[in-house]
Length: 430
Ligand code: AMP
Ligand code: MG
Image (cartoon, rainbow, N blue to C red; front, side):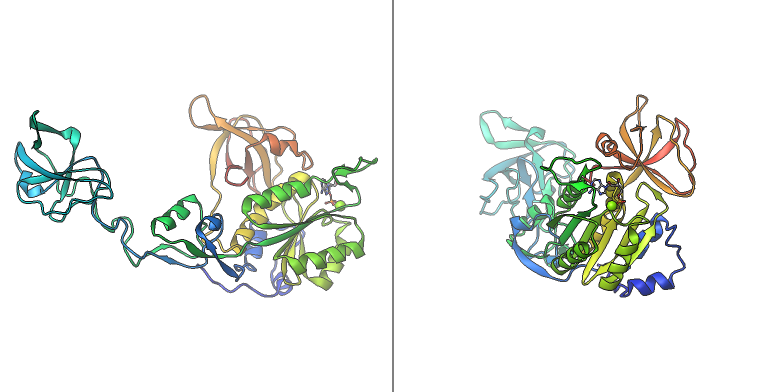
């Protein structure tokens, strides 16, 4: 795991840097945040099943060879290659059978072979397995005299001891995300308990006087708080411990109390709303007293305002209020840092790939855009992406209809129908 010590002062870094907080590129903002991330130190030991979706905190060394013994990959006959090598046809005598879990204990002499089932141990001295369908009986009445043809290779269909994993080698490394495959792999080594990083604790709340909670009637000018639900969903997919702190009105004393409480109980605090121009000023002063927070206007759409920093001992991400902006900024700026704090290493880069865009796109140069698209197979082969239409940052239904982002880089202008664009699938994200 790369253990570059994280920089300590966010404020110092933001002053020393020559960036313009009023026009931060997406890449620059990502790089800045990355400087302050190190995995949370605390670890715990968990029973294997419970360790699913956690991150390994230790290297796992194989206690034995896998497979533990030479065994057969086929149902057939195990024989000595020297007995059949270079002959058109050879008859060998069957002296016994090796089943998976029940080996053949006696010696096998020259001119002899054994019947063997998949997974059966290949006795010492034998070095090839011939599948049953490549053989015939010399005489149908005698099942113990088998005819083998030409072309048998040494070692064919034998799985050798240690060919998958050698005893003493690292099977899995610290930083590995434990998926079903890793859980199975650990089980195959007889390991029943592993050291993992404890789950990340993430506190979040929505801010805004206009927000109503579900269950309340909507007064004039109010909207239901949807951000807390999308954030809840996105965080749940990452496997963190959630602390949902509800809706907080735009009241300095209330906000300060919630920030303090969140920072005291969580590793990460995420809010939505309240970081745009106009609202930012009083929050800025408050957070300056409570920690170190930088406020950016990112050169992107949607999701322009973004705050990042530290409140007490917690990382803080202040996302914009618009529902689509919340999702885009979460995926582009919060997801990877959370994985990093969880101990994941190396970080998975979300793949992007080219697709033909079926319609024209309006795009102003000078900012990165994350438009929403529906990717599907093109009639002539390959993939095509259809824009979801209205791209406003408040139009959450565009995220719901879409299955991918259409990534339009800063320098890009309008896109003509039929052009190739880069897409990033939601699959794997959500
Ligand atoms: P703000 O960033 O606080 O200025 O909010 C920008 C826009 O997003 C406003 O139209 C808000 O009503 C809307 N908004 C803010 N927070 C939420 C939320 N939690 N759920 C739904 N919409 C919100
Ligand atoms: Mg607001």
